[in-house]
Length: 281
Image (tube, rainbow, N blue to C red):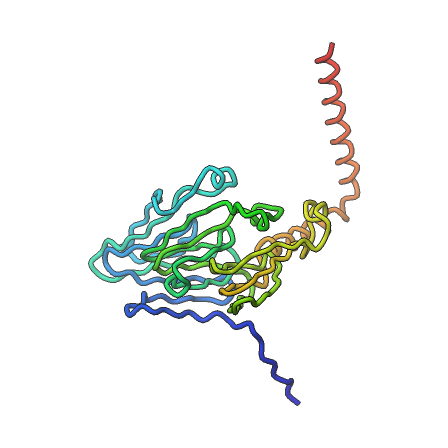
């Protein structure tokens, strides 16, 4: 007997655009996807550094500082690049450029005109854009949005009326929140949301546990109206599992690791104490 069908308030994301002249593009692949964008003469694509996979022959590539992409001192301190890659079709015929996701991620085309011209994203969610799209990395000053870790206060804002492409790990679903509707989501699973969504952070454990790490310790309580995009496998969760799988067997096979670590800290302690004694003398 077939399993019963249940309706769900979460839907897979489907791209829609109100523009008459839709920019031709194609998303290729399953998990680690590539977006192939067709460019007419003198059209250009702005992308994050290192994302180019392939281009046609007449596409010019330039690493430039784009005035519209706001990157400040905080972003530079956290390792954010201050430049973007511009792909310009300098030929007389149509060309194309292939932009690849940097991780095992899905690529979502976002027409900002469909979302009120503004979208708040997780850091590094932006992949590339066409036409009128402005990317700004801003610090969220609202106290209730303060979350342990850079992802809690460093947000990426996309604004304009153009076409942007963002990335999300694993499966991606969309939730349309009605006025006053509330949904709780793991903070790291939020890819993007509209500016109309109210965000409140809830700690599921004492703050000290959140500081020292853990899973599902921070929950974002979202209140509508608005739209939120949710990913099932954030990159940091994937990287943590890979790191545990790689380091754990090595530590079990090398019982001397903890002895070597203890000796290292002991020698560091001796050096610090000796320097303090010599300074006093």
